Image (tube, rainbow, N blue to C red; front, side):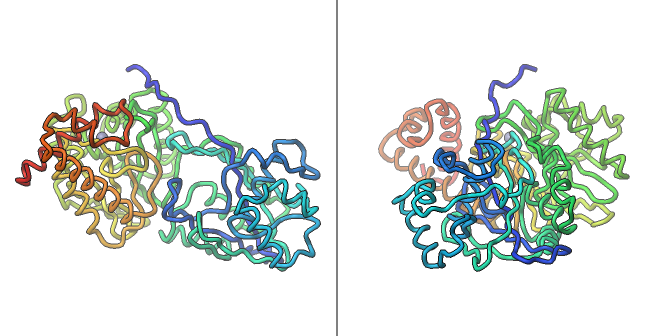
Length: 495
Ligand SMILES: [Zn+2]
């Protein structure tokens, strides 16, 4: 199969600060973590450390004792982000600044009256690299279209300064021990990315002379993108490169596991090196004592099933494949051994016990399935809801009325805390995201209905009038969606 021409996005420079409490207990250190605002497009609702993208002006700041200009710019950007997000200023020469003076400096910066570099210069403040301990550089894996190459610095909160979440990018923040923070993740209370979890685990083992060494002991801390992404315990997201629909370049294969068994969802890559990487991950888990119970398919699309046969033969051919009967019927190259019906329950015994309820959720495809872990608040959404890009409803597999019904059904599930979709990162704002999807479709429907009432009947003309927010390149797909909307309106008796 030919390679896709779509290249992953280039990572942008970013920096983040892991803020340690002053005089914290080295055996059980406290850190300040934040919850990102639900409104943010990048990792909204995630727990993380303060930080953000580097500005051009950050490099204008002279940083004493920095080993090179690149490190200086990263330190400067990290310090600015910390100041902007939490009001904590890590500078020298500013020890006598009062709280009120810091607030007024922040106001100058936020209002754009002064740039960061000009502000430091004006008040004769300076940054010193010795206040910032480099503890790793993490690159967002290529399955996300928003990618960052983030430098992490460990910093001790200065005396008489207290972080204060400034409304905007962050929803909240708090001091807590790294151990408690990590436990909260283990208890399914938060969603976080690998560098955050790595930092918490490392600090939970205490501040020792080899702390930095422990931070840097894995290749991911040196810019190698993580392949096994655990947004949640017992759920590995293993994105594989696929010939999928832009902006996505990858499909999320999921490995749901416990001490005994593994379920593998949507091994979708037709590319050999991606299949090998997934097989190596599965082999490692098998070596740790797990067996593969089943390969499960959310739906029939090639970017979700392209690696099934390769994985099956790698595993000796005996692992069954399970899917909805309508998926099985439509697949010619993949044999399905077991059919799921709506409300079937998959239980994997072991530690911890995991139960997934199968939801038949047609709309994107006839036999589309979602999987609901009610104990953990996890919903695996396949292509019904994705972490990036949009969902295509393309008749006859696609059906708009079914799709909206499926979204409503997902919306009605209690206690959802995370959505794991077929493309892009996890979604930590489940109900907000489902509502967005529903209102987006209903808005389109209203506009299409108005166009029809104005006498426009050709789907191409409807696209030109209604899809003013999409590029003409996507008109072909929009036309399919218009047909799906018209079918629904016809079935509803509206046209
Ligand atoms: Zn699909």
